[in-house]
Image (spheres, rainbow, N blue to C red):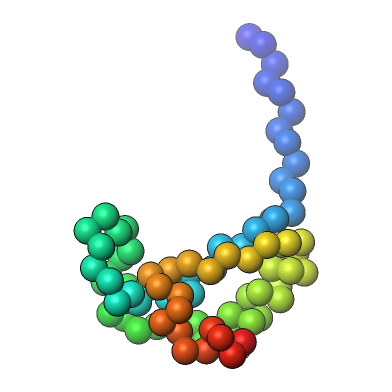
Length: 80
């Protein structure tokens, strides 16, 4: 039986994709946004997200992506 190649080291996270909210004003038929999560209303606060972003940066993340339902429904996004 041939030997398996060595397992590669796990590198630093290069990118954080932040699902800021599941809320969305649209009803796109192809969307995979879990609508039942949007009804729960339990989102991270602005301060909690800032902590996550700082921790990701400390771990080596160089890029940040905003996703979710529609991230721009968060009123705090433009001020942060």
